[in-house]
Amino acid sequence: MIARRVVPMVRLGGFASLFALAMLNWWLVEPLVRLAPVLWFGALSLSYSLAAVWILPRLSESRVAALSHRLAEIDIVLWAWCIYATGGEKSWFLLLMILRPADHITSGHQRVLRFG
Image (tube, rainbow, N blue to C red):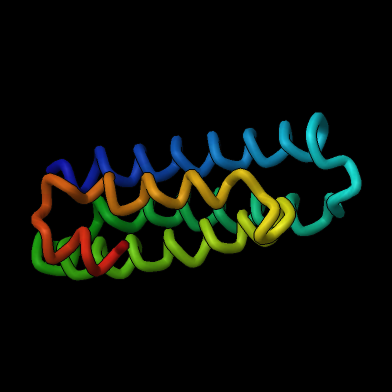
């Protein structure tokens, strides 16, 4: 039940917050960074999150478990894109990438090491 309903909503909230922070970063901190990559990141990440919210409740338990692992891997790619869109190696979002493995600490050390 949690993987079907709660996790997709948390993913959506997380990417909406990340996009809001990226826009705030562009507006206040880095106005020289191009806006287009930030907007593309927001459009893709929110579409991806909404698709997960729509698809996961409709799948069987075994498929939800397998797809949830793949979605967590795609999350990392989208986070990396956010870092690129907000200034690359100069982006303070690089520090937020540490939170990704911390999300999975309750799932075991192997999963944390895989996402770390």
